[in-house]
Length: 283
Image 1 (cartoon, rainbow, N blue to C red):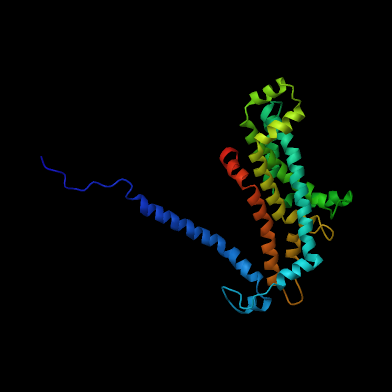
Image 2 (image 1 turned 30 degrees about the horizontal axis):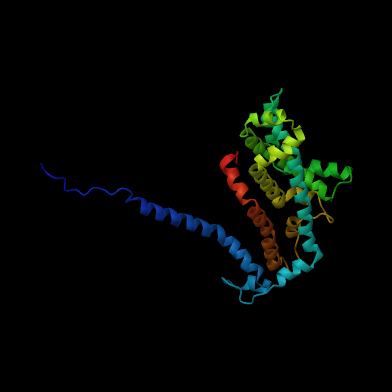
């Protein structure tokens, strides 16, 4: 019998090149994503003349003047305060409304429930520009224009459907027997819902709060249309900053860096919930 002289292929011999190619692709993709952020950061430490005159990877004359301008000028730092106020209001209101609504959709069947659920999602699909004029006229007539609650309630139109959709998926994963057992043990609905049910869906609440916060934080059209002076957010201030000499690019870059930080902080605190949410929920 003739022996097979051809060498047998080692198992996994092609996995190393593929792994290296995959790591290279991911690295290039991360670099592609991080370059704009890096460029924004170095711009925030440059003077306006340096930004417009030279191309450098590092600031030639490192300066903190741009950040000092934002942190000492009320017209700038109050934009962050206003944004924090209405974003926090919107997140709290959206969760308070969405939690019982999602529980009803996940536990009960009633006439038109599927149609109502679909109608909620259609509100989320509509662009904010559709509702800018109706909200402006409505809030102007009831003296809510240029208030934090006006922007918070306007954002609820988009965040509540998203919150209901995400939370309903988590609540469906909780067995109904837990509800029945708690009621047999003498728990009222409020006590059961707050003491037992909400801790079980904590990852879903974390994911929902994250998406509500981020949508309200970065949304521009409604927040700019419904405010003028007292409740003007930072996103609106950044789009209206033009001096006699043109745009102050350094200050705008510093404002952009400070705008990214709150989102990064929120992600840090709810990172575990987000990971579980992507694994268990609808997201």
